[in-house]
Amino acid sequence: MLTKREPLIIANWKMNVLPNEAVSLVLEICKQVSEQAKIIVAPPFTHLSLLGSLNNDNIFLGAQDCHEKDFGAFTSEISCPMLKDLGVKYIILGHSEKRLSNPLENNRITNKIKSVLQAGLKAVYCCGEPLDIRESGKHLEFIKIQLQNDLPTNSFPNIENLIIAYEPIWAIGTGKTALNDQILETHEYIYDWLSDNYGKKLADTIPILYGGSVNSNNAAQIAHIPNVNGALVGGASLNPLEFANILNSFYLVN
Ligand code: 13P
Image (cartoon, rainbow, N blue to C red):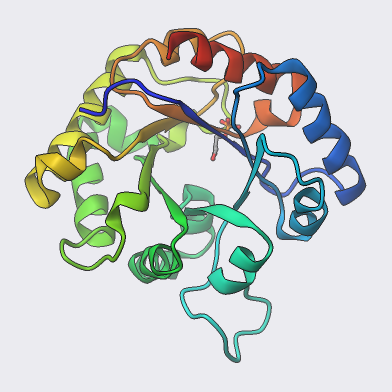
């Protein structure tokens, strides 16, 4: 298991915040966090350039998706080289909101991860079960199928740049955080799957983040779960004080 080290806390702003609000939101977060905190923000694509121009050493840019090809006739799409050129370091892939809005998305995730890793960027791969699967007790089987489909062994360069985010769909935007035991069990399962399929040495280095209604009230408790290496935060990352408190809670534990 990856031992506790610098936590990764990623703000997924989804389709929120106007470009001219983005800078003040990020600078406000900076004011409230300890100096060593790494602030990773995945804003809408339209805000990346502006946030990059801040040249702030504490702020790291993330993107919420990318296309699997580098260039070509793919209207409306954005590729890894374009994001890298803007200073993006992390790219979220396989988010359930993308998977649900287009079922074909599931078939593209492996190639997207490949493209991100090939570019030398960090791929933040999301997996997680819907409510009916959780209630049927088949959540681990569901996660196993996602991992098998999306992370086939021997397909990735720079696999050490993979980050996994466990985001149970029923906990996203619902205010219903997964219980500590549920997080512990699923993270352990993901770790074991990685260890069986990629080897223990690699599994020991891959951070596993939790996402789903993380806020300043539950962050400390989640940060204490031994196999949680950070968080992917949606709604609470839009409030600077909330997000700063989440960051501070994780840094206190690590
Ligand atoms: P919330 O924190 O709003 O539940 O969203 C989680 C998420 O989807 C992060 O990617």
